[in-house]
Length: 160
Image 1 (cartoon, one colour):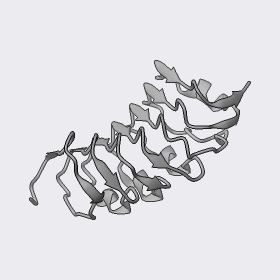
Image 2 (cartoon, helix red, strand yellow; image 1 turned 30 degrees about the vertical axis):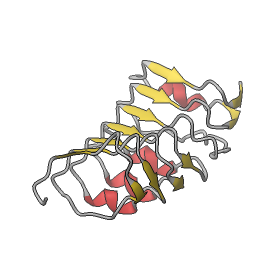
Image 3 (cartoon, one colour; image 1 turned 90 degrees about the vertical axis):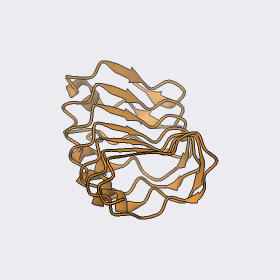
Image 4 (spheres, helix red, strand yellow; image 1 turned 120 degrees about the vertical axis):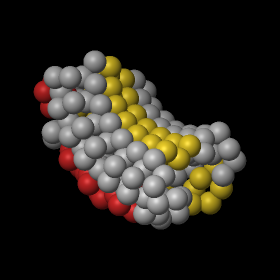
């Protein structure tokens, strides 16, 4: 599979954890709507050509790995409706090409969004952080996301 460009196994009943793999030419990884468990593998960062990752609607746990910031071509990251937890990932700041970030429905986050959480995401157009138990103030840094066109923060415990 060394030259594989797109891997779409969505809508199956895949179980177990996502294996670590080295697919340097992979551009699209779509494993949404499965029964996958475990953590988002840090080895995803070895797939340096990725532009789309959709791991939504699984049972993934733990934090988003810091190594994700090495995916500098990533345009879409959808990790919605999993069981991800931990502090709001500072590693997302390095994803300069990111246009859509969807983390909604990860209710175990229960974190405060740091003021500079999304700094550097100058191309971000879609940000969906609904129903994540986020707390505290809405970061003023969101106003500096000049490309942002869609923002969903409903279902959290945010204040002004």
